[in-house]
Amino acid sequence: MKITVVGTGYVGLSNAILLAQKNEVIALDILEDKVRIINEKKSPIIDKEIIEYLKNKKLNLCATIDKELAYKEAELIIIATPTDYDPEKNYFNTNSIEDVLEDIELINKDAIILIKSTIPLGYTEKIKKERKNENIIFAPEFLREGKALYDNLYPSRIIIGEKTERAKKIANLFLEAALKKDIPILYMNSTEAEAVKLFSNTFLALRVAYFNELDTYAEQMNLSSKDIIDGVGLDPRIGNHYNNPSFGYGGYCLPKDTKQLKANYKDIPNNLITAIVAANSTRKDYIANTIISKNPKVVGIYRLTMKTGSDNFRASSIQGIMKRIKKQNIEVIIYEPAIKEDYFEGYKVIKEFGKFKKEANIIVCNRLEKDIFNDVIEKVYTRDLYGRD
Image 1 (cartoon, rainbow, N blue to C red):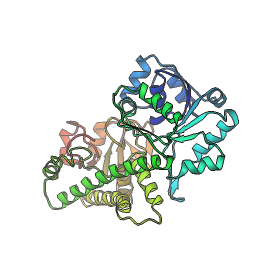
Image 2 (cartoon, rainbow, N blue to C red):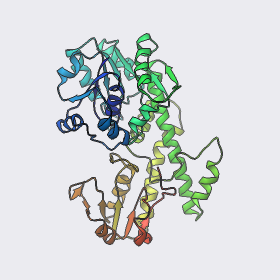
Image 3 (tube, helix red, strand yellow):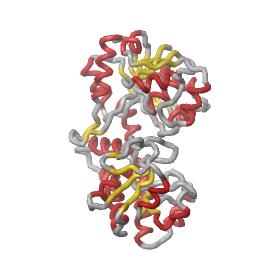
């Protein structure tokens, strides 16, 4: 099949590579540098499987910035553009999707359109009516940053937001390209599919927030947080995943998806959904206040990245901690090899690791890398108990 994927972030690029194993795929982006890198069979993002597949696998994949070329002959167009949360509107900003839909209507109005971007509940039905286009389908993705292609090769489930024969054909495209066998496939209406995505991510955020609040209690009461979590996690109904304390849930998905779900609950009774959003701010307040109470002159932030094995620090939780500390007129410096500039949003970036360790009175790490702080361990503040995400 001739397929176009719009957007080459984690979702778009991993989908493009997955489907390019057995189909003719064009990846469309607005950034020339990204397009060039992909066409050189290199990855613009850190993801082990994406890097490996681009380098070593036989893929029928090319990247372009040319909309006409990308859309003209495509049978299936997958939209994987960002839908950032707009705090003023209290809703996802879906302009990038609408811009793409407009272009597709002008160039290839018969193409089947599969939205993979995260969207508000009811969006697909609404946009189909507004645009008088029944060819728009929603399919949620469940990918981790840094493991996006792996999660496409070994998916937990495939969900298509339509109960039709063409939905089965779309599901089969993903099924045929995956390495995992016996993948559950669910067909449902679009709004239910949108709800699966938002409720899944909000439950994960709830789990992160729960273990963070457990950790807050343990730290305040001078108890071993690790001992308590180890004991709780051995209950098979609870398990030992998503239980490593952090400075809050961060990254591109969880903060915005929880806020969007809360917005969808506008006139619907709830306690938990609102609390999940509020709990993240409470945790950041607590972490920042703990650091401030130590009266440091210079706070060193070790890495801005969202998690280990990722180069992305968009909406990482540690940035919320930094802002709270800076408000108290305490100097904040950063060590982040992914930043080439001397300053990041007004914070000084220290390039030399030894100098960073020396200048900081307290070194704040959301995720602690083994052995690199042995010489200054008394300076380090972290809530990372397990050395993993």
